[in-house]
Image (cartoon, rainbow, N blue to C red; front, side, top):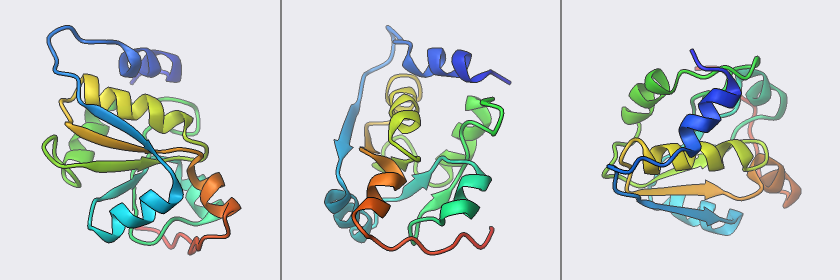
Length: 139
């Protein structure tokens, strides 16, 4: 297990051998458009955050950093790969867009993902625009 600082260092570190893919910051209108097209949305927040605020309908909850700031990138990547593989576009969302920026860079630079969308302003921005956020009912 990596702590949050180590995981961020891994996620932000550049791999010389990897082909850098595209990480695209998107707003909520683009998020709605892309999910309507069927591009998977992974919510990387913690279960406590999902329960506290709800989740965007159709999103796939998959925590990257736990409540203690710990991460297991290899395990997370295995689970994320079942949702969207490296050749498929994927959207990431968290509370504010900061954690997803680090995870998007990890997917792009370390895991070979070709197109990763980062939701700028995260769930906070989604709620701030009055968009729906159904309760999280568990897996």
